[in-house]
Image (cartoon, rainbow, N blue to C red; front, side, top):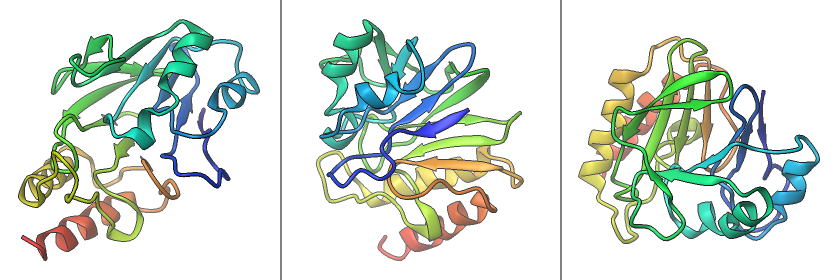
Length: 193
């Protein structure tokens, strides 16, 4: 079961996904809301935090979650304060009951990861792509439009066309033909290159 803990919040935050199962994980912890209470309403404990990237809106609640649950944090860059373990490009990470493939997808931020599991047809896209062809901004530190386009193309090449669900860093999750939203994002991102 995948739940967006930030749904309905009226603050500057990313989505924060609770992925329940054999290894209960929170993908991104959001910012400026009581994510610990949101987690505790649903589960007694979590096994880990996994980060798509380290922009403040995705990691603002990190200290509170680590303090409350005593969990380790996994991300691309262990040099970032708060990241305990590195997830390598093409590395495997278990979220819930499924094994996901980590894809290093810079362009929005240099430590950005997407997580893709072929069996359930699920992708956690972070801020790489959004619904309706939206894509991550590239005007912040570590951003680069040409690199972002390459990363979107990599996600297109990796994901199956019958992708069932894509959970994005902002906005709604996409459960109707999300592969098309990635294609639209690739086209839109190219317009500025």
